Image (cartoon, rainbow, N blue to C red; front, side, top):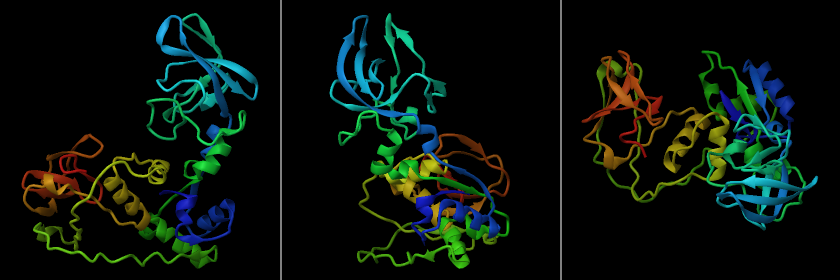
Length: 331
């Protein structure tokens, strides 16, 4: 089970240090398997300023950039479409390891012109999947300053420590961040924050979708609850939500899917969002016969084993219950 420190603090009011929290978790039987600090892999990147950018004489898509750094002006060849004069960038000087590329930057020649470093994109820094251009920094940061200091101030969710704990079979309550925070509060590490009060929705309507649970499936799924919501506009989720999901190893997909994934781990409540326009007929929760296939949200095809719990509509399998939704009805 993975979670970030700031995610934990959404449920736990505490002044305890990271070390005190990890020691308390192990004492509680939630053994800490590791702590990852994203700052470590970004420590050597610095802020630079592109003072000049000219077209490469032998390549239309390359720019020869003069970049101000803490070591003076560096010449860097860049192929990003947004490489231009007057922007603040993230610089990897020779000798710096780039995690997203798994390479160490060196001095090189590109079409006969030397390049003394690299200007990085989000994906190359493993901050997101964005790779259409290099990072442009807002706010006129100091040239030569550490990029991690910029992140701490402007994007703290990107440098949040990630804690991984081992969960024993008798502690399913700790498969959600809320349950972990409750344990720590009981141990005296902090105070559990009341997050059970939510605004009520005034506008209501009756859904025409019917849900049935096969009698031989009730032992594994005694209750299925859902809510139909109309007038929703889907799109990318906010940066903080994407960062939280990436930190625990999940790929952001869309606002609606990301919300369900977030609360699956936040409250230990497996959730899935269906696109009602893609659902044929009603939903049925039942056991697989074995051999059925489903293309899941990760765009991979899975062959179902006998008695796996699944959710189907009139067209066939739509979800592996509690595990992953299908691509055909996904948002």
